[in-house]
Image (cartoon, rainbow, N blue to C red; front, side, top):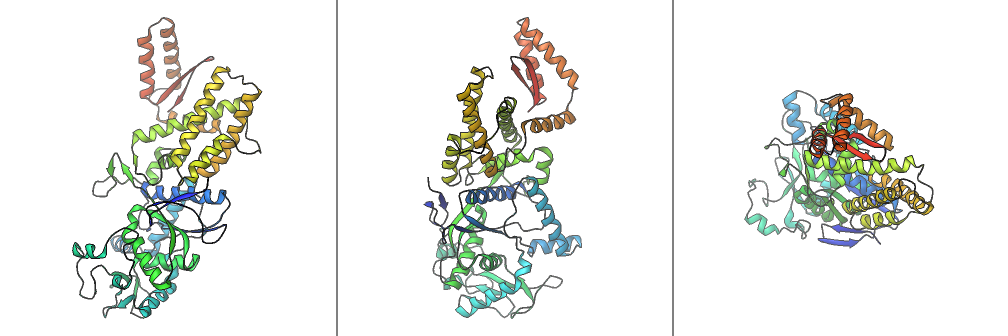
Amino acid sequence: MRLKIYNTLSGKKEPFVPIEKDTVKMYVCGPTVYDTSHIGHARSVVVFDMIFRWLTRIGYAVTYVRNFTDVDDKIIKKSNETGEACTAITEKYIHEFHNEMDALNVLRPTMEPKATEHITHIIQFVEKLIVKGNAYAADDGNVYFSIDAFEGYGKLSGRNPEDMRAGSRIAVEEKKKNPLDFTLWKPAKPGEPYWESPWGNGRPGWHIECSAMGHEYLGEGFDIHGGGKDLIFPHHENEIAQSEALFGKQFVKYWIHNGFVDINNEKMSKSLGNFTMIKDVLERYSPEVIRMFLLSKHYRSPIDYSEQSMHEVSMGLDRIYGFLERLENLGIQAENKEQGLLWQAFTDAMNDDFNSAKAMAAIFETVKKGNKALDQAADQPDDEARAEMTQFRTDMAAIAAILGIFQETPSAWFAAKKDKGMAQMAVTPEQVEALIVERAQARKDRNFARADEIRDQLQAMNIILEDGAAGTTWRFA
């Protein structure tokens, strides 16, 4: 099955055909580094990390650029509030971002440019737009892009400029020819960072930064541009306008946008006080749980972060690691061989617009069948069953490299979970064992009500009981 990608520009899935054979150039909008990153940032980064891994796996030479916006009104505001230099603030949060993404097993992009390192290229970009008649300089030091001078404005978001102008709430600035014209360069206010330019001391607008850096590293047109759905308008719409106006050719062939992360079925919002920071989530959950949660839904769909959803993901990972542990105990390991049916199902899912949710479903279905087969064989599989289990383990090793999950050994996974659970236990391990003995006696006495009561009591403490031929074992959920 050939790779198909949902293209925001066309509003449909399209076969993926890169501009240059066997080569992919991809640009993804990175964070504005003025504060700690939240779980919504993590979703975009993890999604495009998966896409980067898959494109590489199927044979493309991928140049992946993800930028840092390190000059912005929010950064300047924080600098004024704290007294810290803008550079100190941005470097602090870039370092924090890297630490968090490393914890989430995110591969570094090919390049991570900063806007402040590309001011010369940005100024040249703006100068050329003025010469072509697509931008104009006001006498107050502002430079604006004229949307009326670009015929295709609105094609990414599906918005009509005339409708936007008629219903616009944008304050009409006297220097603008059209209230929808956007800023390419702005004059510096007292105390703000600035760079010298033909229009006076100032700094770039947000939109021009990505166009300039995309051009510098990937050329006049490239294959994939991505980011969150909130960037479709105005950021990506404006990138298209200024880039295509200057170069006279298609800026990006495929636009990919990931859905939002909601918190307990509400939109994440500072006004609601429900911004959930990555570092806080990392304190509560294993990085693999977080990463699996972020990939558990199709990337274009919204995903809801809650204690319940994280618990369900954690339990799902336990099921997979539990099956891998059974294979490990039987001496079944991955081999250097061709991939099998699970890998084919995984490939079909990934080639269908990077459908990680469908891929996860295939894994769980295979684990379910595998556990059933081992149960029926009393953990003594015949040669044919062992061959199937070996193929599963081989496929899972390849899948792990794409999803960035299942990186632990089963023993290390459950040991770490138990250690974390021990630290949070309201009872001692000895008390748990005593309750298990009491439950076993209750079952023997056919006092099933008491047996169920003990199980429920332990479940309330996130302790899961597993009954087997060798007796009852316990672990943390």
